[in-house]
Image 1 (cartoon, rainbow, N blue to C red):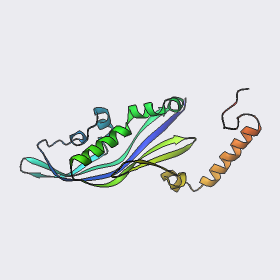
Image 2 (image 1 turned 60 degrees about the vertical axis):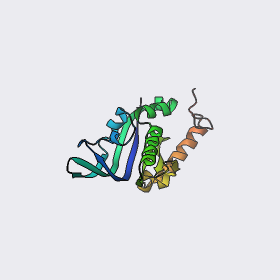
Image 3 (image 1 turned 90 degrees about the vertical axis):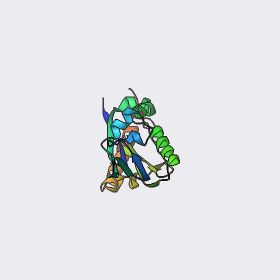
Image 4 (image 1 turned 60 degrees about the horizontal axis):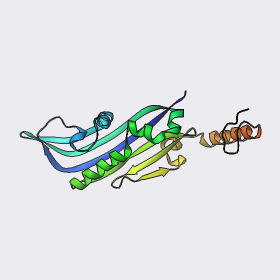
Length: 181
């Protein structure tokens, strides 16, 4: 069974109106309504800009920057994609929590986060930009992988030729699905 890696890259800055906290141990759950599993997956990419004011911690900015990823069984992912990914990191729940924070405080947003998932050997990227966090699919040549892919054209040409050969030799049908003989 082959494994595939799904990645989420964050580059979010959330400027807050100087929120006072009594607890010096700030967690992402102090601000976002997310479950413990999601909080645990974000702990290494979450940070704050803050200062102390007597006995209170004043939080000025939330920063979510970095990458989280997980490996999935490729065959199972094709069949139950949304359930598998949502069990690892539920993007709808995360964006809902960000919007809830936006409604609660007068904040300034900057940044985005990207879901990068492999499909057909190419990473598809979906970008969620502030402040609406509506997803937008990004074409291959505009993705991180595509921008760094100096041999991309040759790779796609070789893949196209291989697909054409497999079809002509009867190994695949017109849709590219393998045919049992």
